[in-house]
Image (cartoon, rainbow, N blue to C red):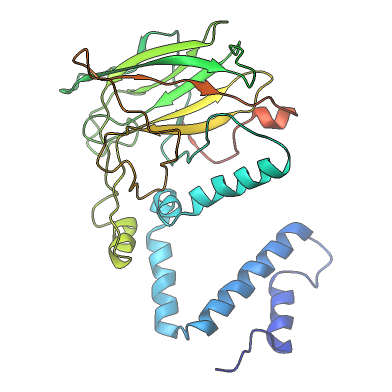
Length: 295
């Protein structure tokens, strides 16, 4: 086919559509929108996408808007952001530390502030009790003072409080913020989480099926780690003995984040230490501006 994207008519269209030819607006946004539009037009041309296919895709995105928080990690974009930030860190001389990995769409602001040793599970759950403990250290091995460790995970049915379709969970079940002491040590227990699948019949599952992929996550525990003078860390662990640990549909698995629970005492225990990097500015100490549920 004729390459019309590079034609003067289409290039003029791109300039007008992105506002490049207008004096007002945000120049950075204009440049980004122009590149997105040009890439999309190039894909339409490369694959000879029909009008029917284009509008079916548009309808899919419109119908699936409520699942964008799952679609984005499911197609690898959220993991790509981690890889992009890793590469940028390497260029800027940052090294070491616990690997970052995806946040996912299920954090809730305002979880109760607790002390080490807290039980995260407010609700009864017919499953084994998990315990976790460790130390938050800095790059020189120093215990990090003033750390707040945010923890959240699913219950044994794979449902998160505030997002549970059964409506059975108490507010902030399996969610806490833990204020650590000067020794940087944390500990908690909770009911063992289970992995989950994307909603049956939903937009994410439909896309995974069309791609020949599954839509399942292994059992995992999410963390935010923040402390004055250190870079904020977003991460999670997958349990290394989970059958899906290395085939997470959301690409959350990373080396260094796959502890295997010690079951020698009869109940699963994970010993896991966090290492933070020193911050170079106050912006380093903030989490992303991603919209999150606040209760």
